Image 1: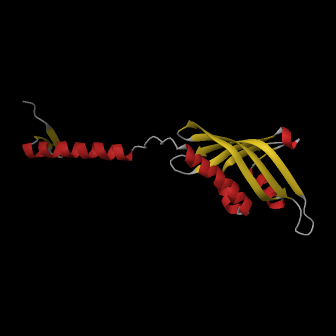
Image 2: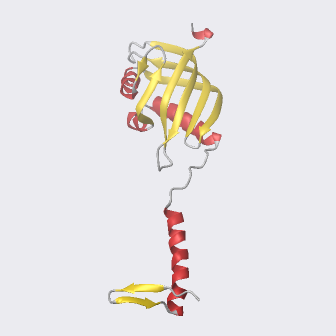
Image 3: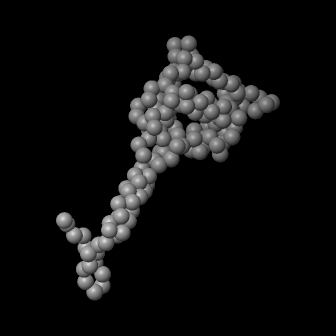
Length: 171
């Protein structure tokens, strides 16, 4: 029979049966707590979740809710179309040119990892870069890609990158 010893300030004493009986549940409790405290692997998003994010982004831009729009992008967001720009430049453009209408067609989602996804779609949109008295309407017809990333240790998804390529119809 093996004797277990507990250290006391004055030396070692053998563990009693009662001590042993308390150790097993304590170890089990500590194991469960360690398991619960460990970060769980991210769940792979459903494609519909990413579709809803993309639609929410466009709706929010059309509504002119710039604070919400800003919060949908990562700090290091990049957009590539006829120029390369960061989120602050995009917001300046949206303040000068109001998104008046948009249609998203053939929206497809590709899950890249549990924390990243890509949307690809055809977008037809209209911006007014003038005033109510002197409108300056611009129409676009593009194929677009948006990269969405889940922020570490959260359920929040943000846009990391966006690109637009004009279609033959818009040239």
